[in-house]
Image (cartoon, rainbow, N blue to C red; front, side):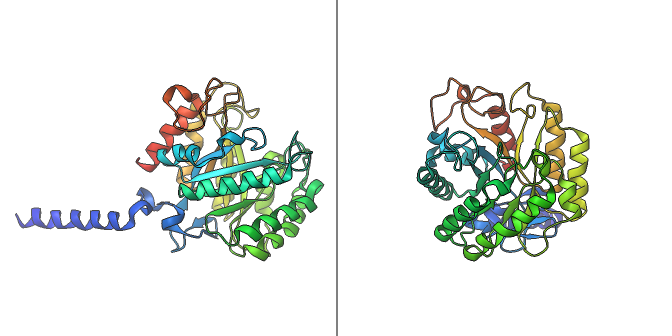
Length: 337
């Protein structure tokens, strides 16, 4: 009887601890982070930590280009993903493509969408990435001055808001070297730091955020709270890139997977669920944060909504693509919702 009483007492202590931690409790020592409970994030070594030094992991969704799919940048839409257990949304603002910020797009409208997205994320207790989404422009220095102006203006408004992370160059490519990217970052980061001295900043790496080892060999050393992005598409990227990610993290580089998909690198093709599982097992083992591409009803397999879906919130199972159904189930299993 005494043993049973002692066991019951231990169980009560355990549940009291879990309840006290609230949404911050998770198995394996990784916190289920929310801005309201985890607060400002910071980087130590290869780890992303909360305000009390707890290890955190962010998982969620990236929008497609907000210039093309603005209808999904709203609180009701984001609530659907938060209800699945997501704690992150990424706002992808293209720079060089048609209607991009630096390609004839309505800059005031795009900045208004960023503000709207940040507000919608905050309303749903989500962390949010403001993403300067270079792609066809290849080299981030092409629009360096525009980037500096954009981040100066946005950070002047948002200040050191603990829910916001800044991604300063989505996918450098076209042979752009790490040296060029690093030099760009060393000019843009101080602009952000003027108004957001403690924000976590994400920096892209060469070859569409594949060559993570180049950043690991020569990281940026003059600033803290930096992470380096690596992107994968499970149908294209396999063991070699996954091993490179693990080696970088084990070597002390803070890695953030700000974009991934279950299909091939084009954003289309069949879903490779076996490869996806291998990637997610590694990501969870290393405690890496990640955002899945993409929130739209575009007719491609990486979109989480069916092309026929006209809703912008309250999605049913029939509204979700194969990628969307996978994301929902993954987030629910991960978060325990």
